Image (tube, rainbow, N blue to C red):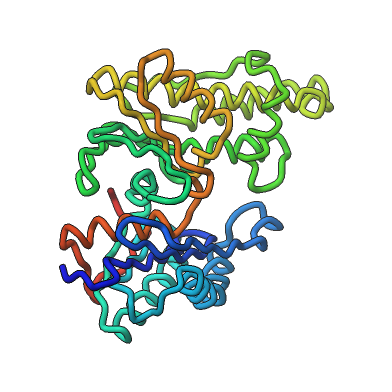
Length: 343
């Protein structure tokens, strides 16, 4: 690939769900990372796809312009444009992919399609002012988000092997659905994490589905919580209100325990002790603390991304685009956005 006197400059565009992001990375170093959030979904208790895609259309040009200005580069200095092809909401993905394709045509720059989940994993390779340690290869990444829960062996920036994943609900869904059962507003996962700080995680015991191998299951846990709350509120209508922190702490403890048991098994089976965390749920303080403790107990090298790279962001798309650019793995105008796009 051609390298200009300015180095390799990648514009990353993220639009998989309800956050519109744009970022600039130069030779692996982050220059800017801008995002426009959508507050409108809070009133509906979840993301409304049609509203999300409309908001992306309004936000994408200002966000890209802001990223370029903060990075102090011009659009003509860009080496390539990386964008999220999937997985995600198809309407949202189409806004980002269409914008990226149009800009690439206008500037005569190459396109790079990026898998959203690969981006979450490679966020660990972003170089910025925080000087965070980067994991050595190979490492196991526990990727946890609202739509995915996976154990991935990462052998290089372009070599991934899924060794475990959820067979039904993802961990993020388990948090959000449990929060809804508790009567908490959307998004409920962060509220459970907040409430859990003052609760007893062993106050209530919930079921842990038994799944063979390294796969996960969370649908049974959700059902168990639902029936438990129904039975208790029939006896005491104020049960949830009177025990909210303990309920949140017990639910969070159970979800984290399920995740870490599988992670420990994955480390034992592969012999890999470099362990990374990624995805939106990696912002959960309880999970971060539990992983650090598990690392000390199991002699792991643990890598946890800064909060800015946990939730959806364009920096992770740009860094993935950078490594794909180095490998010569470019895309073309004929590639379509994909709501289901396997790693």
